[in-house]
Length: 496
Ligand code: 3SK
Image (cartoon, rainbow, N blue to C red):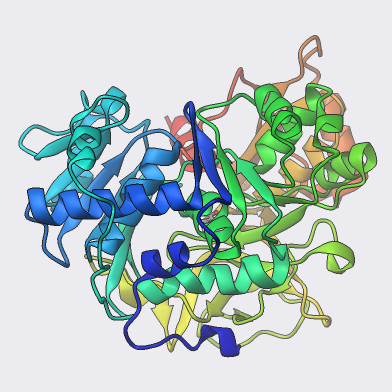
């Protein structure tokens, strides 16, 4: 794509702020409502504070921590303008998790929302932001004029941490050109964000799904963004309607919960609804479509790739399938030796494109990137039309009595039962079969636990050998801070 040819010297924040006229609405939330001019001014002030007052030099890392609200966006942009490297952290992390991140990333200082300073590890120079906090006072002493550091397109702009469905956090490095590339591929060609769009959603900005969807994409398009802080699915649906949002970014669980709460009609004003973080069950796609006419855009992305690389929109959507490689990316399904498998045969999903995995440390780089392909750890199947359908995380395939069974496929079947609100399917050890397909099920309010009814239902919708031989009812499922199911927690629990 010609739009992916960036100049050798490129500062992503300067580019994102360069576009729209200063009086256009830009970002609101946390009681603030800023135009593009105001965001530009504040980001420049933050950059000036970082360099002039706090001695930041290009390449220094800055830890960021706070809820989704405009000051966090100003801080993130300010760090990049100053040539620093943004290390965004989830607001729900505690000291032990933040310590692991600071040990790995060694930030020079931290910019932290004044309500979130308590958990920051001792010894890290911390400047609080938000109303009446130190950073805000310091900003007032700067005039909002700052010449962005002339970073190279290949300089590191951010470190992104995966919260990890395996429980092991990892840091990935992304460059200034990567930040623009995610907007110039998925947002421009699939979401097709417009300047008139009003964007909202739930993923934290510290999660690259949220950073892209709620910050980078709207700024690149000259659209406006409404940042919400920890909303329930009910509140999310109401916020979409109240703010006149036209584009929504959230996870399948939120869509499912909005339907369960009878709130899907509140989404009717949306032009685009994007789902990522986990695969979107066809039943959820149809339920939202039936209630609103909306065609949810499902996408697979990863922290390693920065954002979404397979997706589809409008009439290209085939519910239950993730879609095709996003323009600018190539995707393939490979066997264990790295050779492409025939269409229709399951294998390892591999992807390459303008963004890619660069781990900060450790020895995982060689297993994630092989021969230029990023191996995402997902088992997928491709059809003759180039559509990719998710089967499982490669370590979520269950081998039971010699059969290969995808845990997520059984979950989708269970989710089609009216009593099931949420579920997870994992392998538990079994002497006879090697592994037993085990379902952990959260029932809808008022539903009566009936394992046999759920097992019969699964046998009706997918091959009967895949049915869960063990069904356990639970109040809730373990999820990461970004909402991904932690199947390993259930596997460990089952193994005792
Ligand atoms: O991890 C994910 O699932 C994801 C999805 C979309 C965009 C970015 C990410 C990290």
